[in-house]
Image (cartoon, rainbow, N blue to C red):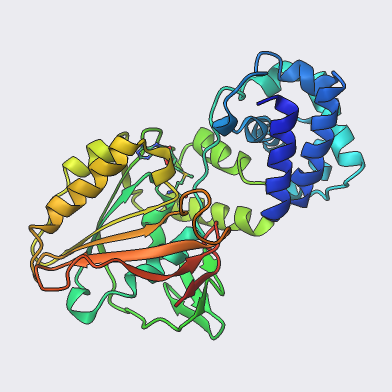
Length: 352
Ligand SMILES: C[S@@+](CC[C@H](N)C(=O)[O-])C[C@H]1O[C@@H](n2cnc3c(N)ncnc32)[C@H](O)[C@@H]1O
């Protein structure tokens, strides 16, 4: 796909997903690329990338990271992520100025795929757990596939609420997913305890390192201030507690080592990860979960909880089903239940 097409397409997606800043900026950069301006010089050598390579987000993530590092001259006054105010006319021209003045600095990040960790998805995952029957409400051993920085392994540290106010989580939580839940009220689980938190990702991000925090922040769209606030809160939580282990492994290898344990429920969960697995790895994960399920008993049950967008063309755009399967060695085990639907970044999740 030609870069101007990629920029334009991503701009339309940003408009639909609540970033007017990136929508307008990408339209201007697409025109500039077509006119052979600074955008074309910065993207030289990237003219023929596959459609899924997210070139536009690589480019804007790189610019954003220069802003966050205070290396982008006066651009900070225009970026809401650092307290500025976006101007739809002056903003794109100022970004073009940066591309013109610092092309090599911007090009440094063009080869890295964007990577985010959406804390809002904790609302969907945690709310999914609150659907477990009493008999399954045992201490939780959490195993997450595609954890990125592992911020959703800390879901129990965040306060989640519905229209009536906070429902779950520490009253003084730094991360507050207010009105994270809509629809049918959930039954609280005050004794919920994570006794193990383990994740995997082929490219884990260390949320305690400066480089890790910078990368996670740079790929959030700068005018989505609430998303940034949630991320910054979760980074503070990750710095204050024992950070969960995220193994540098793909999901297929990680699930091989999973075992059930008496007196606990093993929960395998994941959000917006399956699309990154090839068909063979997807099958392998499902097979392995089903083999584990064969060992489940009432004393060592298993749950598989997912928030995964349906395949392109299926389902309702912008609604991500939250699906739970549980096994405890009893009749009716393993039946998938669609618990509700989440917005792409998790908030709100509406329970059926
Ligand atoms: C869109 S992010 C979602 C991250 C996190 N689950 C969330 O909801 O914020 C997708 C993640 O999947 C990871 N990933 C890519 N290929 C993978 C694989 N084969 N196995 C496990 N994770 C993978 C990426 O590195 C990235 O961190």
